[in-house]
Length: 465
Image (cartoon, rainbow, N blue to C red):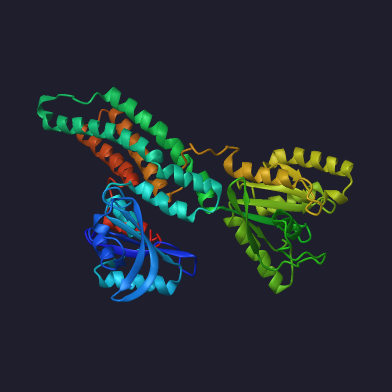
């Protein structure tokens, strides 16, 4: 990977805006900028200073700009960096970038500025990935987790434990050099104690991925039930807008309707579906089929029923037919504003008794029409995906699938080391499993990597980052 030339790209979003920022990074960044900048000699200015002037293409003024100067190694990439703040016309920015390329810069590839920061040791690989997560964050929770990981997050903890494990691996390798003398340099009890400490860290980190994935990507939440249970009314009530068509005619919703809502910092993607019933209408049947498919793929479901038209026996039969046991969801009785509360109470008692045998989720009673108990419904949904965990800025939660897989594989390799020590395996076999654990731990921070992995990671970045 070439990192010794000078790259250029637009660092702000494409399109018309008040300003556009063009970023240069590399050994010739200051020299190239100076060749088109009229006012001061940038090569003689101090780092972390801003200068007013014009960008010239020969005698032609392209724009009036502010130039920010960052000298190596005190920059994001650790190289000389120039940032040109120009007016936010795409045409103006394109002219300036084209001129800088003519003067010797190269158009940057996606994520190449962050790649250089990683290659030069400014950040590790997990921190680089957190940059992309921060840019893509769509809620306060995902923002906080990305910031926490950018500051070092769990990678610093893993690096320290990996160093200690590496020391043991070195001692075991040394034993192999003296195999004929039957000496033992690595204390096996201390090795097991270290592995226990590492696994105490890795296990909860790996388990946190379920929550981390939810925070990062949002929660697909399907609203399902029979026709006229109030699914569309509930969606509109949750969003506080008329998003779905509401009608007393059964089967109004023929296709899925999706909208996103933020609850306590987590994005829920609510999916209003067609009512589940037997039908001879081919189009409505397609809607029912899509409902079932969405249910199977959902992270969370809300099964809605009309308390005025559904008996406990009917509800249990519906739930058993859907085979929702094992899924995360809520059973919600709707239209309590029109119900007899004594009847509803008896209904609740009957269902509570019956569901204990069938392991269905708890039942919540609401009125989507009057918004009764909607705040409680939102809180229950939040608790369902977070296990009531209150998210703080210091929580270490895994949001990256690559990290999760590396943690799981490292944990498996460490378990094999413990089993090998217990079985009194040779140092060579123990060393092999330790190496595997070290490799998987190193994949997280980028201490162990290859160009294919890096290319896959940084290709997902925007070009100016």
